[in-house]
Image 1 (tube, one colour):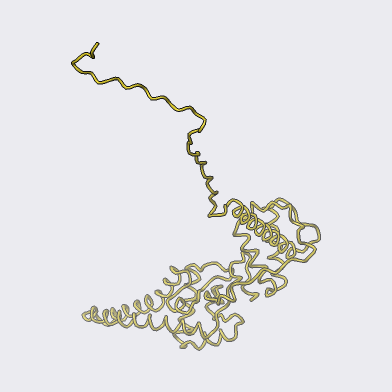
Image 2 (tube, one colour; image 1 turned 180 degrees about the vertical axis):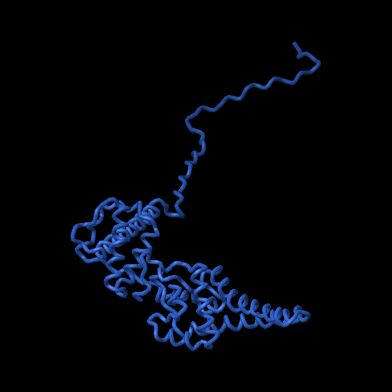
Length: 301
């Protein structure tokens, strides 16, 4: 795995592809390319039937170079290292520094593939892959590329960050981590989870580079004499502790803000006015006299 370490920590989580998966990917590519070559050759044979032998030979050579050599180069360049076979097998071609390949890398791999795969039926490529520590063929060696696996089991991807030394817990509580980008946190986490698998010299250089970037973002120098790996582990642990405290505080604030029933306080019932009862001590109201009905006759004297 030491060969996958780069200055940008791009491919720390990837693994080199081995010979069986690479052979299957090459076989799929060859089947597709040869099928296209045969179909196009039949069409060209019909179209060039009226030409002389020299013209037919020139067209045949041009079609061979364009289809069997140029087409794979164009596909790898446009797809950044993913041909049909590699896409089916979960593989990808990357540079030695972990970045995507360009036209010159695909051109060197395609030119060497004519000798390694087409002219020798893959014997030279198989021998070179078996001898190489990272399973590279001659085209990868000359182009400075590497075929890696993109599909990794979930159990291999999810790894916990190792804890820092106990005497570093809480020592970085005063650091300002607001200016540290997420990309840098991701690189630090990838380094800490893979630190034991890296070459000691390369791992130390990578840790020092990440520590310098972290110091530049926080504005606080690292404690003197502290190893870069321990410094990174302590700062990551401090960030995780802050995230945990922030989550607990948010949960408690949300719980206190919510009332007994869905966060809505109960509505107080309005008092009901008592019924009006007549007092027994109140004097009776005298009835007003009723005037006699008006008639057309006067009362007798």
